[in-house]
Length: 201
DNA sequence: CGTACGATCTGCT
DNA sequence: GCAGATCGTACGA
Image (cartoon, chains in turn cyan, red, yellow):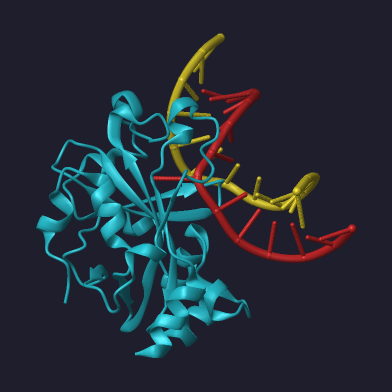
């Protein structure tokens, strides 16, 4: 069951980031379905968040998609080679976003191994924001597409993650963002926990 | 135009 | 734990 757009249009990006944990991120390109349980997210709180690309209302060709309506895909290139996938939230013109930092592979696992060209154990196959994009086949060409479509979407929880297993920490890689470096905007459940929960049911 | 810098990953130690 | 890879993007001249 695909998540309704109302979910993404809500105002509190932290709530959305936390609730995305346990949901299933899916892609389908050339008829190949791949998906995984979202196990790590980070919230980027718009123009008042120094770590956000849209801090202080900054608006450029790269981050234009952040100003789109909630439920839009925002993909940008990081360190010149990694395609990072975000979900835009809130209303149009309000540049909130949630970075998906890790998933636990579910559908199309063999396809994901091929795309990654790696023999990692399954808990490590898509455990970072760059690697999950490779595995799911997400590129910059998918920047700006709607999650209500049939290429990239998110489905309701496949499993329930106990709240006690979700850790809340500072965000990764934003040390230089002054006060924003200390915000507790990261939500994470270990892929080992997800692995155990998946194999129980 | 030229330059500096990342919301990272990998492999080696 | 750390250095190196690697290049699109932003921004100043």
